[in-house]
Image 1: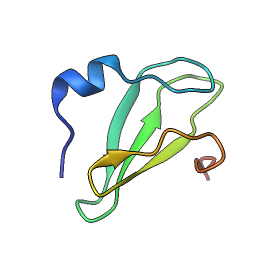
Image 2: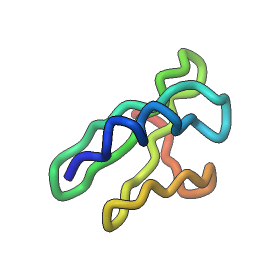
Image 3: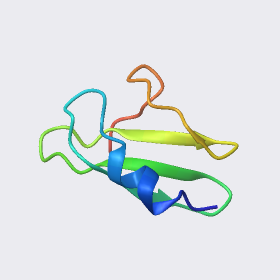
Length: 60
């Protein structure tokens, strides 16, 4: 499942306010922060981005 392009244009990382990009498998999509110092990875559950810093994970 992919998010609508207009939605990706307006969504930003709640931690650093950088743009987000889609990633992950089709069954477990994720949004990754493009900020150089941040890089948090946010889950997308049932087509809804969960943009909570407490729910995000750090890159490996």
